[in-house]
Length: 257
Image 1 (cartoon, one colour):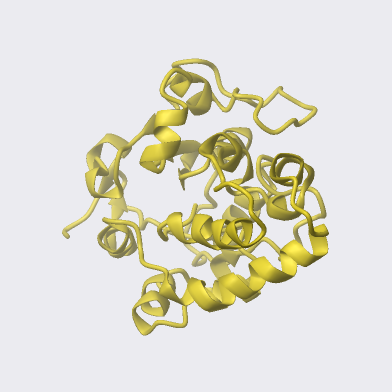
Image 2 (cartoon, one colour):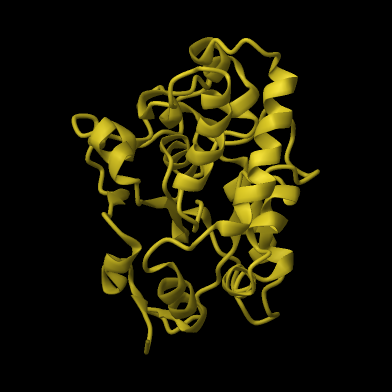
């Protein structure tokens, strides 16, 4: 999930669209792009945008806007409190809670987002060896979200660094925080529980399809194998309006903060 406000991505795309006389990116299209590596240079975006420039030129101009604006990133409301709480938390068996970052952002963009000291401090709550980014060489091409690989790799990064007396964690014991629809599907495909925290505009876009989103069954991005998707209303995923409202005890997590 992006622990940062999603609007900065929209701003960068819209500035380039405006420059070339095109309308702003609607949420019906943006929903298909969120969390999917390389989506802003892919078929869905460019079929909609009908830009008078090449995809490579758009990518170049977008990267320039990202260079300017990504350092302005701010955390989502409640993100810092939640992450700091998780670092100190335990489960019902009094075992330590471990956290990892699974982000579709490429390393270059990630580094832009942490230029501000307060942002670096926040994302440094994820140990460096427990961060999986969108251009991680271990992530096979074409296997970003909604495929489960990035979440399974994040789990592996935790299990590889546990203390000798700690028991390896299974996917069913994991909780994914996601803001995107493809990200929810990736979490479900990984057989993990999911907390969906959508932008208000994305929530409105899917107001009649929430149960499909939570089951990972929107079909927004086509993936051949549906065998590991969730079932409608199976309780394995929930929606929150804000990270500020995370119900710790509902997930068997306890913290002193």
